[in-house]
Amino acid sequence: MVPTRDRPQQLRAALESILSQDYPGHVEIVVVFDSTEPDAAIEGARVRATANARSVGLAGARNTGILDLDTELVAFCDDDDVWLPGKLAAQAARLMAAPDADFASCSVIVEYAGHATVRTAGSELITHARLLRSRMAMMHSSTFLIRRSRLLTRIGLVDEAIPGSQSEDWDLLLRASRAHPIVHVDRPLVRVLWSEGSYYERDWESKVQSLEWMLARHPDIAGDRAGCARVFGQLAFAHAAMGARAAALSWSGRALARSPFEPRAVLAVTTALGLTTSDAVLHRLHLRGRGI
Image (cartoon, rainbow, N blue to C red; front, side, top):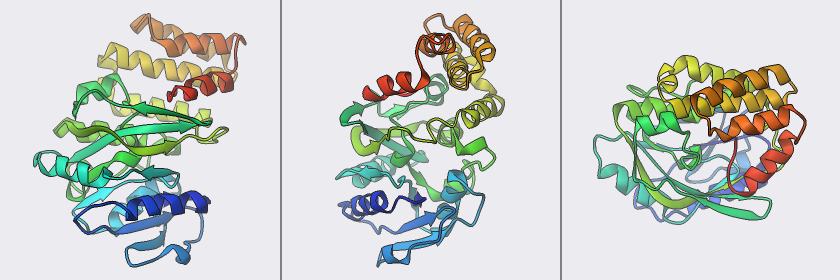
């Protein structure tokens, strides 16, 4: 399923990459238009367009697509990302070889400002403990392939209560990995486009709210010192980006108390003190295929 909003050119590239997959099974695509009218012009033998019938935003759009499909497997692809050749077949084979597994992912190529960075996991099995320590950014939502029946039962749908639909993919990975590790194809099979000036990337208030939501929803994050420090560092940086110096320094202190080497806390301090800007930090990180 492909959620979309006002990106017709990127959407067509995403659809072409899915339709060109060399996969022996049946592929059906539902494109969920969020806060916009469905474009019937994209429809074809394997493509349907529908409106988001649930809460406005990415989480509601994903759930609309999941519920609209009746296939054995459900895959996600954001409207500005592209599946590379062999993606679907490799993941499906990996998932079918592990009948107890619910969820498969793969690695990515991040493209930003003319730079391409390969992000791999170094492993083909991702545990819950590892996901508590790190969001594992290479496990992007556009890499997800999931048994649909498990989304409707033990994993659950994408949580629409998450503020701004931020961190919804990490929440889903954590819930899925509790029952069984995520099977991972450690090859870059999805091209992820990061754009400069993204509003979603800089919606700091929603980032703060969603990270606090994650800490409350997944208290086991606090049990991993490095993972907890990472989230505290992200909160510190978000507050610094909003100009809330006192909150940024407070969260930075909490992060460094758990892990003295947490880089996000240091970046938050330098930003809060006016030694750099949040945009400059993000730009430098994105050039390396990294984010906060």
